[in-house]
Amino acid sequence: MSFIVRRKTTRRSLVGGVDRERIKPASELLEIIFSSTSLHLFPLETNTPVLLSILLLVDFIPLRLHLLLLVVLYPQFPTFTMATNITWHPSLSRRERNQFRGQRGLTIWLTGLSASGKSTVATALEQHLLHLGVAAYRLDGDNVRFGLNKDLGFSEADRNENIRRISEVAKLFADASTIAITSFISPYKADRQVARELHAQATQGGDEAIPFVEVYVDVPLEIAEQRDPKGLYKKARAGEIKEFTGISAPYEAPENAEITIKTHEKSVEECVAQIVDWLNEKGYLTKH
Image 1 (cartoon, rainbow, N blue to C red):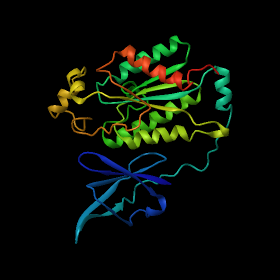
Image 2: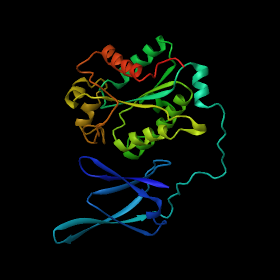
Image 3: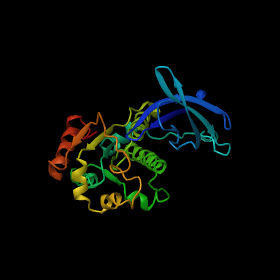
Image 4: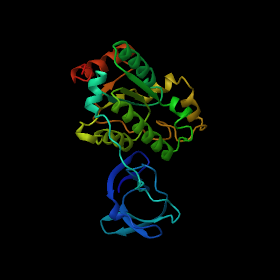
């Protein structure tokens, strides 16, 4: 099993990889040296945070200062291994399904601050694609919390699990030759990378990877805060909402998104056209 390691600082999170061989069994000490304030381990299979008891010891060394993290894994914490009594049951290949349905499935992943316009653009994009005769389905950040993710809150751990579940659902839609459109803040680069890799690894039966199109809805914080249709920024500023992205929790902007749209500079229709033009250029809307 591999792990994602997030080294959390006051401004951002730094991500690296750790192999399972470096993780000792429960109740044993894991000694890692990092220059950080806290450590989170995320198994790639579940992206669920490992509960950690962390003792920070400052070790002064000439010309160097580092933090020695003594990590004790809780004995009662469950292991992160998939069941061994399950079998993958193949059926139609994705290529065959695309041919039968006449289109290619993919995921369009909109990410950005609250009130950046993600849901508005996603809704308009879904309607436009359907009018073009392209099967599309929108997964909205609020809507999924009425059912699939109604058991999740807004802590960092719950946000991670929220995105993991949506990544899996979007992949299933795309595998079924549908364009999945997701509109989630998804503030952490590591979580978005997990979603991308999940699509890249969906290659059973010799199929090509599922296209993953990251769309960064790039709007300045002050503009999003001025919009504030739900009054969330006002509540966050008043301390009524904890861990609110952009105010008391970080948003890690994409560095290499396939598409960047600016809803404060373009209309919704122009943003949709920008996305559709990109899809056409890549041949993703070509009938199969």
